[in-house]
Image (tube, rainbow, N blue to C red):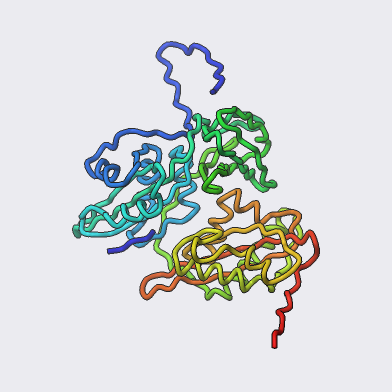
Amino acid sequence: MMFSFLFVFLACKSPPNTAIPEQPMMRYRIEEASSDVGRLVVEKIPKAQWDKGLYNATQELLAALSSPVARITPESVQVATARAGFPGQARFAKMLNGGEFPQTLVDEIIRDCPNNTVDVALAKRSYGDGSTLWLIGWARHIVEIDPIPRQVPLDGAIPIRVEIPSTERGYLYIAPPDQPIEIVEILPEAHRWLNDFHTPGPYRFELVTDGPDGPQVALLFSLYVDEDPPSPKLLFPQEITLLNPKEAEEWLYQQVNILRRERGLRSLKKFALFEGVAREHSAWMATTGIVNHSIAGVTPGVPTHAARLAHPRAKHYENVVAAGSAEEALLMTIDSPGHFRVLLCETCTHISIGAALEPKLSGHPRIFVTWEVLEFPQGEPLPIEKLNRY
């Protein structure tokens, strides 16, 4: 067994017998699953619903796999979900077995989404030797969004309306091609017009809601300005170079500053004093398997520990991630406009990175990374002298 883990329309009457191609849209497409195994998945997962767009993305990813051991990459997920018009933050996992129902994949979704409504989809491929490759996709269904065009003309405009609970706020991060990341507040039930589409290429959108349970990524999707979405690439098996955590940290320091210099931003200086607490937080995430800024009953998070270690306090802009390699960790961070914006903080001057591998006896261990992008409004923090008691 293998386990990888309100629109305004301008309309005119068309000539008789003239077919008008349907404009691809970004939207949820909730419907009943068309197969017995799909209906079984929905039945087994609490608050699950079948989404046709997510199913189309799952099928496209399955077709792109040249073999059962080929890896699903962040780029392939972005292309597949964009082409399918699925607006949520989708995750995918696969399993190769003898054809039996992939309960392990279902259990993974139940652990990941214990209290949320969740969109699901499942596709499979059978081989001549009797084995079956299962590929499952899922995403937490946190908000509702009015349909929007997947493709936008140059200098065009689109309205966006998202249903957010009245107790929450929504922040839309927009990453244009090679331009600074913008942030727009989205109010519950209100329309916002977006019209800054002045550069051709893909625009990445991420909606983060902030409510009683803290920030959540509610939407993650791409729109294409004056161009078509790319075709999916065939995914081949490849060896992943897993750097040791120290080497990964050094590589990530270099890559962050390359990205910043490419955008006309100053490089960040390495702040060694906070490396230890960042590394410790990554170790706690690797041990528990929980990717979060704090872990209940385990650690309050890096800013708290850093405040006990040094004075004056720093302003922390933090990213955390788990990935198959340091390169994948960086790609996943860039793929999220909200997280990428942290790395491109204009007022920040320093950075501390800590990495750790998960304790795993077999298979490919994941690397957990904590990024602390820092601003020192009261001056550079210095170690707090411990009291000597005799």
